[in-house]
Image (cartoon, rainbow, N blue to C red; front, side, top):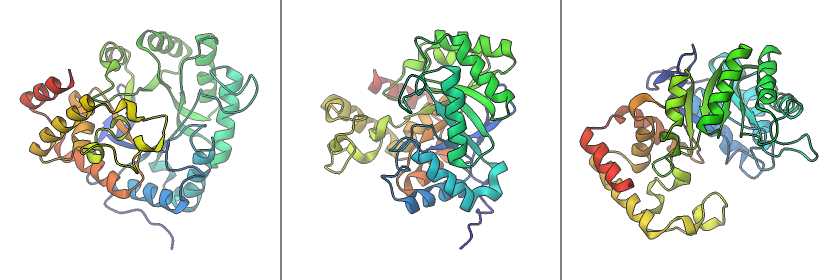
Length: 329
């Protein structure tokens, strides 16, 4: 059966201008870091992507190394795009990244012009695209001159292979220098993608101010702290959870009784607001309108429904914010 997008897909989603650019992003975006590689069920991934778009999520975030194995998430997304979403390509924001190890040898990692251009060429081929909407440098390179990395991003835009460029995981001081270089080259930075949640707040020290001062938007990844800020761990660590699976991204050592007690107290505030903890955690990251979008992962359509449902109740009273802060300190 040929897929037809829901005619009501734009009715309940909020779109926010990405800082000083002309581009608007949905406040909830879908990331394909997990659950879309060769180790995942293809039809489930297709269902998730269709469901997200049917609910107004127009932004799909990938990277060259998403899988596993690396490249497989882009390959599967490309198939779904060609078979289901191609008529809607101009309604979609598709992003990819390069910066982590992708292939053997000295040209398959970090931030050289050689690597970034070659990697994007491979990504475009895997997805069957002529261009991506946003291309990110995925992490700072301690050895390649920042001027070379930014020149590569500028070149990629001028070649028509990306409409906008972004950075991910850059600290404030290095991000500021990168913004200045890109501005001089004539390809301003659109967006920065940092890790940000109630339990990961480094961006508040200076990065968010730096982004605002330079007219750069932001999209927070891992806003639910790898699933900790959900109802998954309220009663402890389930045997079938990510923390119990041996995942390097969330270990049992990280889930101390002190942290779990904070999760339980936060859940009480969420319940008083008439929300799930995951919804409150997403709304909290979006508070104050300093963050353009939150980047969620999903393995079930209900998780997408919960995230979109957050939009109806994402404002906080001063008392609620103070109570949350009292728990987090």
